[in-house]
Length: 339
Image (cartoon, rainbow, N blue to C red):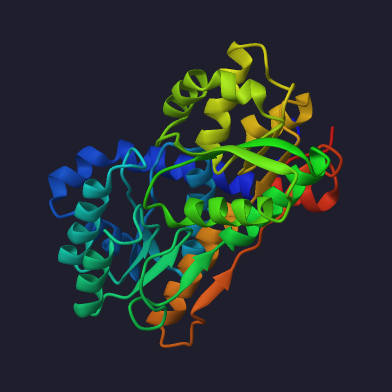
């Protein structure tokens, strides 16, 4: 059996830990106390709440793996809990409020909405529970309203996507932008970066840039099918995150148009890497999700120990193509093995 490397190995450990935790659920209920209290008893140190945007996408499994690795190294305990879908702002706010009430040592949060989560974060800060923001921004000032922002330079990632797509279509033609959700700071920054590059190319016409795919690949597929004529007219497409790319790609497959239009996506999950190998995608802009989780938890531990934490920690962004997919750097980043 091929040996696993990089963050992929840690993902399996994280999933195993999760399965064990589920199996112990009845014992916890008999012992009494919250999940956070029980975790604190086991960990004997800092108890950190780590709250993703959602819990279904592959991206968040890698973030969780990195977060757990950092916690293990620091002797801290994390409680991983987030909404099922990435459009449930109310549930994410409720989760933050619950952890504040339980009195965790600190909170690491990927906000679903850069405005709606301001109040619960301010409430945590007022109760001396520090908050590190990861992956997607929150309105406010790092170092004052929250400890630090840890994540990708998303605007630069969107610019890189625009530059790559412009090159693929020879600097001229029609392009389509598939947006994600209103209020999602990370994807909005990518979309704005992409459009800024398109404006630099007078021979490129953006024929659609106002359609939002929604929280899941299924929603994005429905959008793709509803605008299939526009997609067929396009020379290039950009999707601003994993579910948008996967959903629109499925729509193109259903209509026998996959691979016939230049397509650049964001997030190099396994399904998108396979599409890249098949020529259905020409490039993906990838973050380093394992590092996002790792650096965010590490920053929180430093804060709790009284150490200085920079207001922003950039975790990197990269262009992956079929040509560089099997280079040592990309294999390490994606946790894959050369074939």
